[in-house]
Image (cartoon, rainbow over all chains, first blue to last red; front, side, top):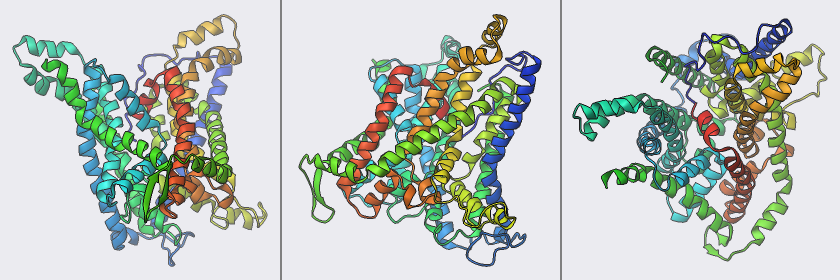
Length: 282
Length: 284
């Protein structure tokens, strides 16, 4: 999930509920409660990060055996795990580009034009977003099996592009709907052809939405387990490798990789939201 | 003429992809569920409805359990995340975005990995339960893993943002003056909440129900990692039928039955309330 941090509320607006005394006490209780829920959400992440620093001796990284940094040095020691991570990243990159292009086309058309079939397209998009992943994965497997298609990186990527398109399209469509049409009219008045107007005016305006849609596609793809499990065959991605290794115990390298992916993701979210804030609401 | 063609050219590649890899597979699955045969000698379409009856009768326990777990998890999620969404929407001030970001932090860790991390926390003699048992606060035989409590807890943990976000979006849209008006008309805080705030938040709750009930009741990661055979859900059955025993007709029938049950709810929702809320939250 990508996160947009731009505050939708106008800062000058006073708090919705007036400062009555009973309210304030209730507010403090709710504040505490909110932090308890956040702490609960963060607990397993903290444990994951901590056990990446665990000086574990055996195969099980279960109990605390002292602090070490060595797993960061031996990050790529497990060839199968490294290979799985590389496959995950490659699939996510291809998904990002392909779903980015196809989703942008749909999102732009839905935001800009009224055309026959727009309603059905919307419904199919809604269905891909709200269908159980299990059923999408299972149905793709039945298709690939009936076609006699070998399962592997290609089928995984096909599946990931499929479920990412609708997300990209929804992000782009939202941006196109809020575009200021007078900018394009100004370009046309100044003698720009529709083609020039699109590439010099419209496209730069929707580009931030295209980027955040693509980031979303990347995040969905690299994290996906359920659909991938059905479409991978014997190929192993990062989540599938973790799944397969749980019975024998996870090596600390998994914690380290999880930690690094977490940090990179948070960093990208914070940076892109800071940039969005500087430019004003996207 | 060119302008009228433009939208169709733009949507062509994307909708072709969705057609080929979403609509066609669903149709293939429906067809396969009515075929008979096996992987080696192939399948023949026989319109054998009995597969559905047999599959549902054989796995009714897991099917009902999945819908039950999904329903309980969804209810718990409403109760658990409503106050959080309420506090952020009404008291968050300038920090609203930061709090929402904190709620989304689990999404930066792989779904499988954060579920396994819970198992690590809740291991019978791990650092948490082990310490509590050593201190004599819990009986030695006490365990959480393998129980429905652990599975539902995992579902609640993994899907919390999908409930908190749409509820927040609905609450955030409430005009503060409406609440003020209720208070000015001598509604006490409880009445103002019951008669004004909660009804206005309902669309968000419905969107949240849709976005949590469907993935929760079809999930198999949580029950596989945190549960035991007595908590097995329909997702595990379908997964095993497909990937282990290759009984494609039964697996397809079960998937299609599950899909039908869930999608009736999804499309009833879409007809009644539109698709905007869910789309907005899904792409946040």
